[in-house]
Image 1 (cartoon, rainbow, N blue to C red):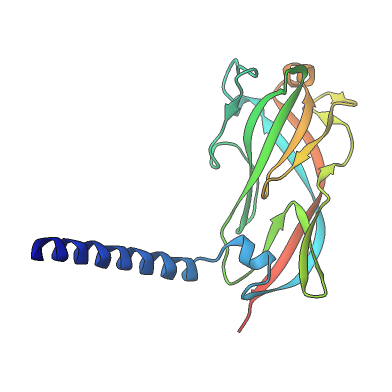
Image 2: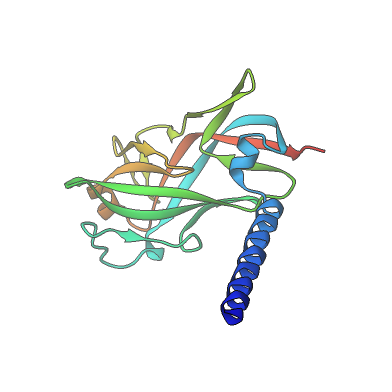
Length: 198
């Protein structure tokens, strides 16, 4: 009986230590949701920003099976980067069963100090102490370029979310015809400035 009590006591102690460590870690970690919800932080400014996206085809796998799709880690295909914000290509695949379009999904990764400017693909709306989000990210035009050619009517917004993800439709023939790179401009990003509340 004493052995069981000691074992149960040891398990409970380990659980308490683990829970305490998680709580301390959560308190020490700054996460994006706390910033955008202004929980311990204040948003001081927001400015619209456009980003030129250039995908170097040489950095992509050869003979991608778009029907199966391909996923990338956050450090594989970086498309935009500041000290705090990294936008990367997350995946490429055919859009549903439609082989006419590719769906390119993008996502963000962040380093979040106590005070900084970050890039997010939405605006944070603050009214009567209530927070909501407005997605404005979309291609500036339907044009896509490679080094020497312009493709018209080649790109459109596929979807936004969850979180900081968004997807773009790209005509599959444009991807195959473009020589070394594919570039286009996406607008509606938000350069968000914040500080930690004292």
